[in-house]
Length: 364
Image (cartoon, rainbow, N blue to C red; front, top):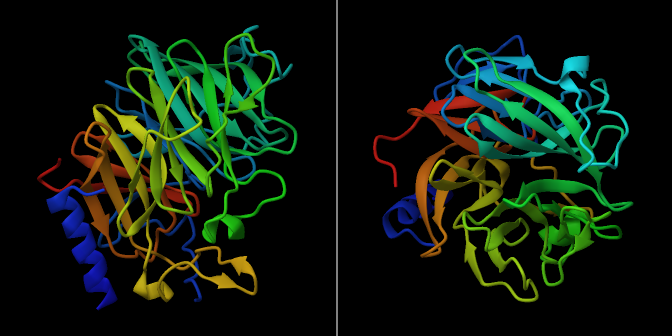
């Protein structure tokens, strides 16, 4: 009955447009398709994805030590390590002065991504890095050629001491904003219980440090994206399953909130004209229901849960269903989604691969 309730909730999302023990993970060598998915293997914990517009190329983060950045060819479905710190990949820029050297590839632990195209075929890629330092790494992307795009590390913006970034975004003028899921003194358990733990931090061009934006403290500040017109931003309160919108120049009170029905959105990104959210099913029968607090700590959600990808219309604050599915034995921890042609690509903060499935025939 719970499964029917979840599917009914997903159907309602599409029609109404409203706002235990885990299985052993398969090895990277065992990457055969499942009933739901084909896979791109060798991409350890691809927590976030970014599609370079008008190209077949996808960038994947690697949320484990040394996984760094992967470049994926959507035509061949093969991934390669992209940033190696080779001399031609390093070009320091005084706008990003906090780090004298690029991230060490052996330590580079990439989490959230944000790709903003500056000119045709050229963009700025921001990467949350936990490997060796807590910082936002800045890369220049060039995809104007016929072959694979290139990247150059330009510098970094250090997070405040003791603060670990989760997601990152930027405005047209170069202002960078980042979320912190749990500020010092708070925990994952706190935000699962609905307590305030995180915040959104901003650093404008020329400033020397990030500063907390007042009023943005939420239970588990997670995914982050700016409005198309630079008027504000959208942040996911993971502990509440809410998308919370703020005005750029006055964050003391949210503009509005929209709760995701029956799933836990993680990352939120513009993908073409769609504002996509992706995450795991909230009340998963295969895992005994909702996330539990066990012996005073939130469980790690290693039990395989179903997933949902939805599209948010900021003007109407309505969510519409893009795709959903049941638990898959080879893929868990859905955290991000991009669309390339007729395929939906899913990132994960747990799996050792990217999942791919065909889109439903009718999209919002």
